Image: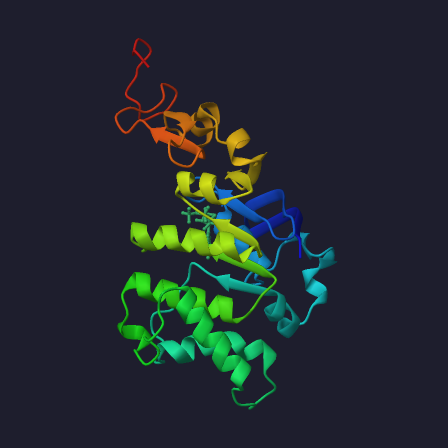
Length: 271
Ligand SMILES: Nc1ncnc2c1ncn2[C@@H]1O[C@H](COP(=O)(O)OP(=O)(O)OP(=O)(O)O)[C@@H](O)[C@H]1O
């Protein structure tokens, strides 16, 4: 199922933070949203899982305006790992993941075998098999993250919306998560701060800056040193990963580009 976003405008308390965003993810494709802090990534994603209503513009699922779907229909199509992740669930791991099955249940209907298998499979996929009985509130940040991801998988959505899913994860679990997402081949919209992870994972990147999309395309085409300087304000070389052949961004952690206000390079600076 493809996702399209057309001329999206979103405001918080009258302040426009997303202004005229167009982007898309083709069916089965992983589309990444990257951009500096506050550029609007989470805000765009919130309109796709209907946490926020756009001031103008449309979110389309397979060409249909998402506003024509009931909440139940939306939940059967779209599962999200939002940035606002509750930690106060007085529930077990298993119960949290089983919440992912809710869109498929009639009121007060119990779990059937299919639900139980889906929950077990989802927990296994995130490496949390056998942890069913633990209290969600007593998990580490990374473990919670993985359980919430299992809940999204248990929802068996056509479209996954993941806001910074690698937050809190150690490097091994980051790599496992990226492998899992690649293997799923579900339409995925994902925001990531780790540009190397984004370059390796995503079929398409959309770069947000100041509430607008300033570049879209294959990671190799989009992640140029010029764009990294202009949008992120950093110096970087883009090479090829020696093991995978993916684009590899080597950041200069010592200096900022000459145009950056914090670079320290005055009019006579070396830049
Ligand atoms: N609930 C809110 N109320 C008011 N303003 C908000 C709210 N959430 C976000 N904003 C503002 O909207 C703008 C875009 O924020 P958003 O969280 O979408 O950016 P982001 O690209 O996801 O940032 P980050 O990389 O820091 O997570 C920012 O200026 C932010 O301060």
